[in-house]
Amino acid sequence: MSVKQNNLKTWFKSGTPWIWMNAGAVSIAVIMTLGLMMVIAVRGLGHFWPADFV
Image (cartoon, rainbow, N blue to C red; front, side):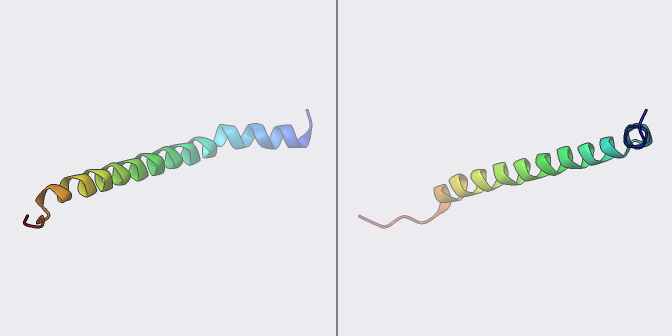
């Protein structure tokens, strides 16, 4: 077993990759939630915007 494989194995056993993957998943979820709220706001606020009289 080489030193690089040993370091990689201990890195995985430490749990650090899972912390980073969890942080990435939470970041994606927050960005998607904010994006959805922006779409709803843009589409929904247009309903209440005053229109020109004909």
